[in-house]
Figure 1 (cartoon, rainbow, N blue to C red):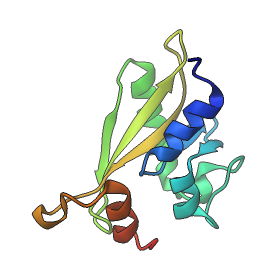
Figure 2: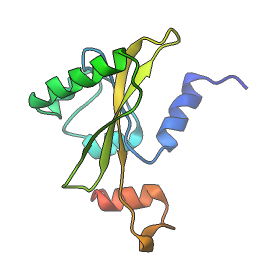
Figure 3: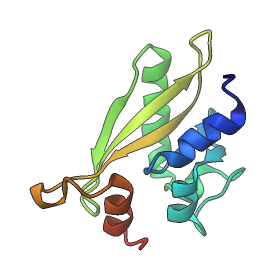
Amino acid sequence: MEITKEILEAILNAYPYEVVFCDRTHTIRYMNKTAVKRYTGRVSIGASLFNCHNEGSRGKIEAFLQRADEGEDEMFELCNRKTGEREFFVPVRNSEGTVIGYFERHEVPWSADEVSEPVGDYWLRRTGLV
């Protein structure tokens, strides 16, 4: 089986967390269906990430990109006190190892009572999308 763009997109759309991929200019180039659901009205493909993040974030993101250029992989960003999510900066490299862009990965907190709930349902409920 050849792994096509269609298959890769289906994989990303099956992922229950949002994926917003930005290039080095901070232009949003891809959003999976969960990201579209969560961020509709705030950001869109082809727009600047800074339509969603404030300009104060620019220096922080540029610093993460510098660290990625120096060889770091996924980096802890912060714990969002509003949602309880831990957020990570994830650089994306091409086949030569050059950082071509990035996305932010979120981890949602779990309680012992919620561990059997499917992650997609849990995430959507916690973020108020259902």
